[in-house]
Length: 529
Image (cartoon, rainbow, N blue to C red; front, side, top):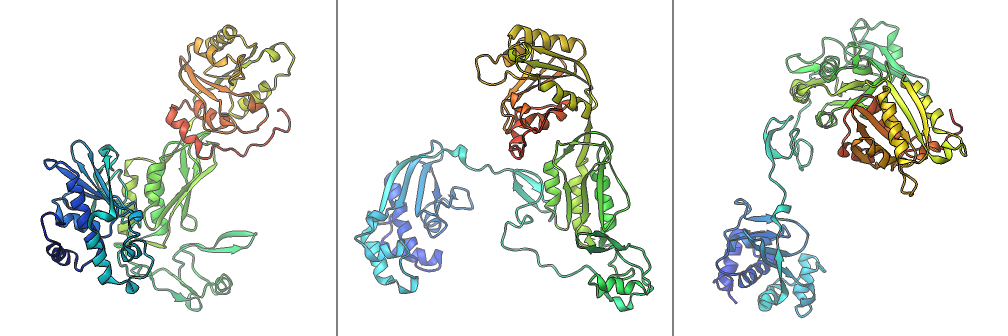
């Protein structure tokens, strides 16, 4: 059997020249390429996929015009010794693969293919004889249809925030090399420029940074602050903190190449801060904390926060996005990691912050709440109304004025009319309870649609609270609360309601994001408020 018109010996010579040595996988690859061509129309234009990085790609590049460089050969490493030829326009083609069931008559080939012995123990002469003698008998051929739409897209060209080189990817930020996804890193020398001195020689010197003292389970704070003059009495204190050498002013690197941790933290804070956020411009222990300036919903640009934290030598930690916060609550903190940050790293991190703030607080804009309790058993007095005390307590917490509290039976028309009446009387957010499950008497959802509700989202990936309902009637925001909130102290309502009070848009995609962290650590209510 010839391989693409070449005698076996001629092909083996090409293998040695291209591959560097005669490899069994290359010999197998020659027969596999030949088999593929024999099972394809001659007039086609074919691309190739190799399912292994070992040997087969080189055999394909020797025998076909398809190479990795021109993009006609792709490697999708499934770990199988197989290749696929397919028509680049129709996707129709063949797959040729080594078939373990066919190896039993070729013991040395079987040992090699299944890695039953180390290479040095294999009989190479016999191995090549068996592969050549077997020819196409070791492989199976099957028809395939390739879906080119499933191939990874090439992506756009971006400039890496760290190395400033161009790279192809799906989003801006750092290239894979700078994210540590390659087995090398740039060789770096210790270029901090810092020279420590012995604590014994520190008296009269000026501290270069805050020096933290930690007493287990008691306190943590600076024993000395940046700029403090070190007194003789401080020497023993520093030694008790485990410090034999320290940095003092005059020993730092040039401000042309590095930036002090305090200056870096202040620059980060100024760029990160948005509306409703404030910070103390005097860093403590190299760190700046952010506090809420008002009650509302904390919002984080999470994608850019991640991009920032991917940079070497910097960090920012926040509370979860979209949680309710109160005025003066600490919500985030940022700092540089080293005492002196190289300016190249500082400028790269600052580049991420050019597009606007990372965190802000959306204020509560809706002040008037309507409470609509549904349930025939409640309306008839058969069951105590448990929802109104819970929602009254919620109104007090968020400083809301309750327009009215209305109880109606499970009657579609009465629920719709009550909802419209509460909105007409000034309700900006309408909380409707009960009647949201799959029971035949549960008509709350249909009644709200009758009342004109639009932008309906029914169901949330939160437990408890999977049957929560969100919508809008006119400008009034609507939330339907399942009966489970009578039993559990935290439900989907607690995650969603603050965002409605801030009059923030909520889409199906936004609700889907609640799934992570949506399995709530809810407890049974001890008693009603």
